[in-house]
Length: 514
Image (tube, rainbow, N blue to C red; front, side):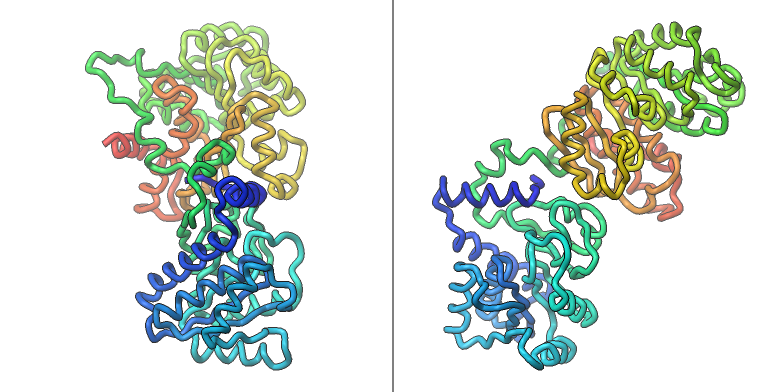
């Protein structure tokens, strides 16, 4: 399923009208009908039930007027409220309001004297459901006080709410919101919006029901919309059935450079995850002084102790040669989990990246190593995969997290393109951005996965899949990691730990393959 920024949807609407003769009034009709359909489903039939429709002056309000007409035809009792000046209605919205009034449907103007009190009473005593057609995707910045009051009244009424396209008050491109509608169902029009996927918009949207509303499929699929939701149909064929002649060396040799004083767990989790997701061999390279304490815990993972620049930290010229030797015999080299930020270690990471011929996956501290040396990512032999969480990406880009989130999608796309790397940006909705401008979003995780070590398991998962899936390893790795996390959540809820995700990776892979 495609995901659009609001400017992209505006352009699609324009082209639908100019190139396909699909005019605005037609799209509005289909949108309103879709909202009425979903409202009917939510209420298990609206016949004889009472629905309050709250409309703004934009096209979102026009959709609401169409919805009201269809609900009346379903047998609902409707009360329509206009939150704004009639003179500011768009042409299409005005036409649909006129149709409603020709049907003898009363329309109350919310900001007239005493109307707000009647609105409160109507919601509390009569309404079974509220249709939110106030603001839509065009909202950005500060909200007018009278609109905020209407939203507060709707939220406090405790009725079921259906939002048109996106809950009013949620910014469509970011999910940011201060005062916003809390919907039970959001009827997305044309395509998903990123505001449906990022908090607080994600929580405010309720269940998402997407309707194409008659937009020509050519416009949605021709490549202008470069963002896509990761769903089963996208990943189902990424893993091919193995032949009976496979052996451990043919399904993936993974080298891992990880671990330092106090952070050996990250090294263990990442190196073991690569095996659990299907790689044949995994070798963990770590400070020689820590090798003895880690080996009893790595089991199937081999270890290689390396020279140290400081007690418990890998580094120095003598460490470079054994790392390069192992890396060039491997299909992929993962660097970073629990590695620490010792200056000597950071220099070693950059030296390895410049000299290794194999695929690189850079996580955590290995990403920090390039904070002041970003241009060196352009010199890696193969396109690197970086797996930062939002805090690490903000640090990499020398900005604050709040600043990053204000324009996250464009920032992530731009960063992947400029630094010719694949970026896997971890958050409540994980983004995978390719240097080509393509972006994929995984939105099916759970709150229990906000736990120490989950990112280390993800890095190992991506590395473990690379031999079999190539540049699709990031997409498939994120999806399998999420599947495993959801399986763990069934048993442990918010108490799940990273090792629970790790141990479910094999089951997730098997379930996807079958």
